[in-house]
Length: 94
Image 1 (cartoon, rainbow, N blue to C red):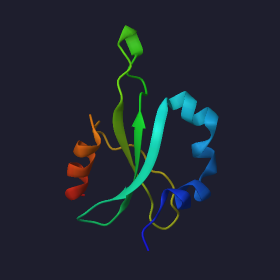
Image 2: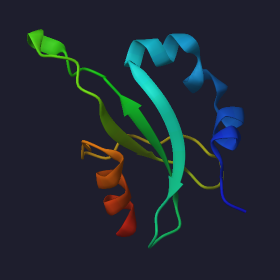
Image 3: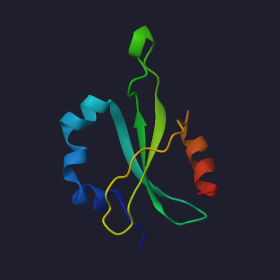
């Protein structure tokens, strides 16, 4: 059975607190799976750090791999994505 966002929230509730969401300027979360590997990933729509140095806030997407056994959220992948379409394209190869 595929891993869901509810599963991840249950495994790591501290990640999804209102304070954490506000600190990182996250807008929404979803769990998507790689097409090639079937591995789970946490996909975050976020404004995080885009308004530094006077720049405008910019919504973008970031991906954190999930450990499939523990559901622990792993460090971000290096790439930043401008929209969900780019995320889904990346997931085709991962």
